[in-house]
Length: 188
Image (cartoon, rainbow, N blue to C red; front, side, top):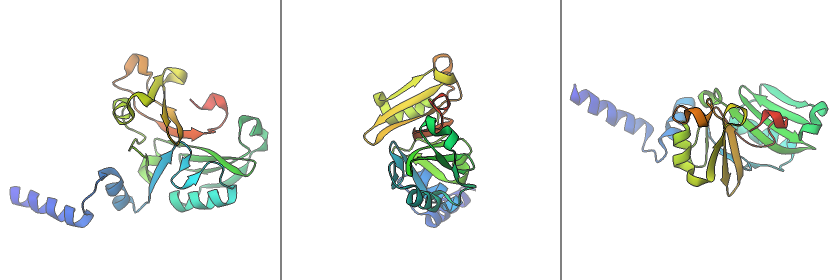
């Protein structure tokens, strides 16, 4: 039995290679999806302020074809955006022809390998988030539980599944976003 286990391990190592970041490597290999980095100022190489047409094309190259193409939403222009592009559980917002924000939710992890530059993914514990970001991460009871991270590329924030004041150990990241994320009452 031990020989089979070692053989299996060696076979998997040969198949997948050596990963410095096991999550992105395994997820990319298993899902055949690119590794998408969530920054405080954009997604991978698509940054806030990029033109809507080029940002939309680049985001669809990274994430896949959007389930909802650019939707003009002039009625919500008072919320800081006037158009959005959506995938199952990923939304990118645009205003005046520029990319201005994004949000990913729990289910997005299963479809595309998404993580912050330090490796924080939706579904991770608040404890893991604190280990990754140290004192630059704060949490709050806002809207049932939220976290905020100051990075050199801007602020990353998101919701938690529990209020961290009452259940810090059980709190998990349910969204990761940056920039404009819908109307202010909808973002942390």
